Image (cartoon, rainbow, N blue to C red; front, side):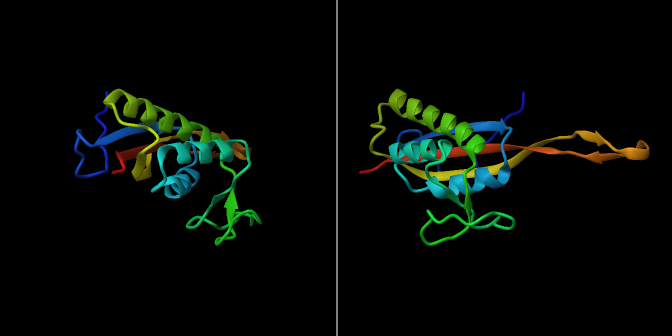
Length: 154
């Protein structure tokens, strides 16, 4: 069994709460942009935002990986965005796990603010597609690690 570590440094179990999703089969591009969007939000606001993304009511701004991504008129301040429904569903599960961890530690989930949100590439699942004349083309799937650390606001 692999031993995963968090990228957040300075974790104090008395004041911080954390949750992670390991080797999620989602787009690393979408996961990174969702994590950047929810970082700094309160936990309840982040969960409601992810639920809106999942129902395609709110787009996520794609700030770094924006080539071949359409413009969204709903976005304010940045034109390029998308509705990453699959990634939003998996990240929503991690955020609900974080809410459960808050309740277990005795913290108020309404006052908890996300101070760290990261998505990084994990293991690569290698697959090949058969082509003509006995050739094949790679069809690799990059799995994603998603981490959240939160702290109760004073």
